[in-house]
Amino acid sequence: MSIQIPRGTQDILPGTVEKWQYIEEKAKEICKLYNYKEIRTPMFEHTELFLRGVGDTTDIVQKEMYSFEDRGGRSITLRPEGTASAVRSFVENKLYGNPQQPTKLFYIGPMFRYERPQAGRFRQFVQFGVEALGSNDPSIDAEVIALAVDLYKSLGLKNLKVVINSLGDKESRDAHRQALVNHFKPRITEFCGDCQSRLEKNPLRILDCKKDRDHELMGTAPSILEYLNDESKQYFDKVVKFLSDLGIQYEIDANLVRGLDYYYHTAFEIMSTSEGFGSITTLCGGGRYNGLVQEIGGPETPGIGFALSIERLLSAMEAENVSFPFEDKIDCYVVALGEEAKEASVKVLYDLRKAGIVAEKDYQDKKLKAQFKAADRLQASYTVVFGDDELNKGVVSVKTMETGEQEEVSFSELVTYISEKKSGER
Image: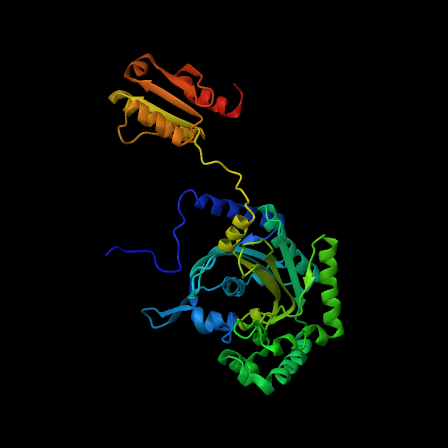
């Protein structure tokens, strides 16, 4: 019986991994412009972190976490998302004490959720996210949204839609929460078991339900925007004004929610409007939170962030036929004929690589014709050819593959010659 890859995971092979590297480098470039610093946290944490940081009424905690007991009897969970770990590190390492605030972080790494695999969704997936901790300024809400939009646009995506909502402050949320309970309670038995259990614990999550999204009460549910107090309205007005100032188009959607109690004020999603992308159009989701840092043991600290799946980003790029601006080719292929020449080719190859020249040679004792075919497959710009006779004379033949031109070059000048040809100086 052959051993196969676990369901919901994938091998990222050469030829594809370069696309991932390109996206990751773009994300790092954008974060550098916005002065966000990378943080790397463990791939597993104590389960309690996610019970507190994600919420025990969420599908992630109730249905999707990979949890197990270690040999010491401690409950450990493979991280299902990145915010809780970033905030735990912020608290544990007392980053809130740094003189420069807010603390602006980003992360890229694998996350794990036990869910039904489908297009663009895996049980192990890679998430990129940012967190800005320590500021109540609405301009940083706009900054975080702008960072996400800039990343997508820098990667060539055009069919994007930014959707935004306000969840208000605690007073606004409490008023809206009670209105939702009053709205759904008389007919809650018509909803799924999850929604029935959420009614008193977290009625906002009913609006997120996939099973009952077509129920008539969903369309008539009270809007959070009707319950915003003056302070919350002013905050939201500033956020959308800043987005307008930045030239970022947006839509206000009163049904866009974040179900956790510590989310407040700004909530947003970025969606793909490309045809053929799929029924699930969300590329990125984020929002402002308050109380999470305290829940994990730190001081009262506001935060805002977002997270996106690299897999879904790749799917969106594919849907828009975005090409990647790199070529899978090498600079030089070394063709050696004869035993002494083959031995000498090891040092030749090493010297070329030390000079920053991407070089390769034959390792399977192929004939001359097969070695030239290998150079073609690798799209080598130049081939360096020599045998035992050339080795004794101290020269090699350099062929420019595009034009077919050949030139005899001494061994001592080979690296300089190829370097100058590569830079266009010859």
